[in-house]
Amino acid sequence: QGDVGGKTLDGVHTLPEGFGQLLEGTAEGADLVMAAAHVGQRVLASKAPVHVIGGLGQAAQGAGDGGCTALATCSPALVAQNWDNDPALDPYTVVLTRRPLVGPATLTVGQAGLIGYIGCSERGIGVCLNTLPAPARDVGVPHYFIVRRVLEAASLDAAIEVVCSACRAIPANLILATQQGPADFEILIDDFRVLRPDDGAAWLTHTNHCLHPELISVN
Image (cartoon, rainbow, N blue to C red; front, side, top):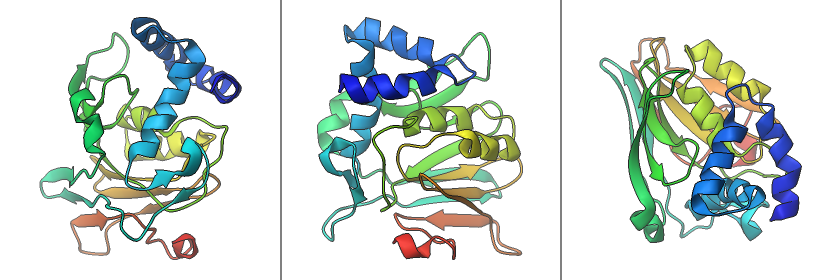
């Protein structure tokens, strides 16, 4: 754990919002060494219906596994999903309001200690999550840091830039309600595509597989 955590902590410290310091505070409060707290942001990802083999390797979805279905609309602005998470995590699931001195207020639901998860911000961005069956890698910024930065983005374009600029550790899908309308981010470790509603449609839906024509081959 320490080796993997140590290799990726430098990347977290380069994020502009001071997430390294936030993680240090979480580690101190939980009586963990910093590297273990960092790895914890990734181990919780392996509790999702698409499992990360060995905790940090190739993501793969079995035929009997569950999954999440999400939707976003613009009339009214709404983002929602079912959440097929591991019941063992229920005692650690919290609804958290953050009101930082710098940046927007956010409301999230997720496991205690996570940097970011399902939620919305006062800037008018809402985020829900799906897993995707694509390769992961050992070293990279944990997905929850990306989710938090997307939540705090000022616009859809700014949220896209957050994903593009990140050295990503795992594949994942984000579906968003924004002031510019619904959008879906299909995020792979070395590729990224944005889906928008078809002409005339006011909504998007997504499950646990890629829909963009250029990413269908990973399903």
